[in-house]
Amino acid sequence: MRPGRLEGKVAIVTGGAAGLGLAYARRFVAEGARVVIADVVDGADALKRLDTPAATHAVRADVAVFADCARIIGETRERFGRVDVLVNNAAVFATLKPGHFETITETEWDRVMAVNVKGIWNCVRAAAPVMRAQGGGRIVNVASAIAHKGTAGLLHYVTSKGAVIALTRALARELGPDGIAVNAVAPGLIMSETVLANPDISEFQRASVLASRALRREAGAEDVEGTVLFLASADSAFMTGQTLVVDGGSVFV
Image (cartoon, rainbow, N blue to C red):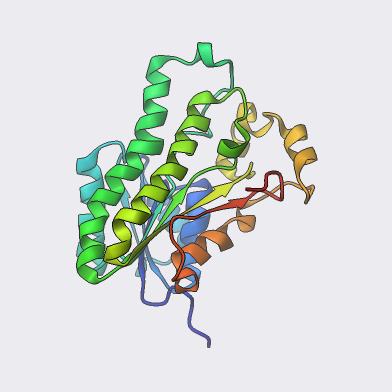
């Protein structure tokens, strides 16, 4: 049997208890990785769905809190001995209600920024020393194609994902000398289980999004998980600071 593309690797997926995060975790396990899912909710059900107890672990944590991120890294090393891949997927999105920027509350703005931007910074500064000591690693940040579009109605989310793209470029420069590659994936509207659970998001500009795509169909987790796997694996070994847009050809960058 051909070995998986992540055979022997240990990967952390934040926001991994449901939706795209769980899809990434499942694909990584299928490719031979041992996977830790970190989420603000209990990951017990996600572990049952993955059904690979020897190769998976869950940590309940809020990425907006550095101490929680340090605990994610600590538990991963304790359970599996190392950290090879970090997928910064945790984000506030599927629970949002689109609206004019003047209607966004300061509390909601701050939470989006704390999770979507500060959360990545927290996770990377917790993981980087471990990866550096190991001689390298791979970090995959989840941005969004919406940042390239500048879509109205979700200013806080669009702003946060634009920051993820910029953060990815700067981190790639800083961590490159340590053998740590930092790239991002920017999905378009993906009809994951968490998105479908909130019609305010799943129906937001749905028709115009589909009409803008060169490949005019809905997208599911299977349409983006392969790109995340590519960025997490040795197949992208000489690539860093890049953002790959996966949106069916809605925007070209």
